[in-house]
Image (tube, rainbow, N blue to C red; front, side):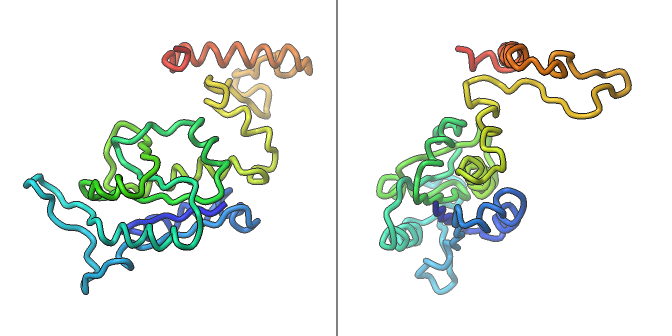
Length: 224
């Protein structure tokens, strides 16, 4: 898989991709993550990529030309399954979306910034608009990092025990059950006996019951 990320602040994305699972997956050659500076595609001598909004609205807008040049440059090199735009008014990002995107070969993620991108880019190039929550960030870089992380960890070989991802919250529409480790008794707080029983059928039933109970209490909307 290859993920190309276009941003006005590439420095913000240096750390998230240089540690933990994301770093190891890149070292294994399972994914290539390339960050592009939008300013490199500006035809302005000062590398300016934003301007005032037509109509007098407050805030700056990412201009159509550098964004078009950047995306077109990448599209000339390979075919992309999706060109994603990170924006508060996009489709809510879910585990199901991450699952679908993890099957792609090539993705572009364009990071929103300022008041957003010239809408013509959304009409010309963007195939999927994604929001990671009903709030506004200073830019789409953190959203791009979240989306990339959620996708990459699902790639075959990314996690040592691939079955681990199957029991994550939201994979089956439910929240994950509680998990415990050693010691079995800590300051009087004990691990449920069923988890120590070795009865895997009983353990599976307990885990499902706990998932249903936690989902009903914490995220009843998922059960709808």
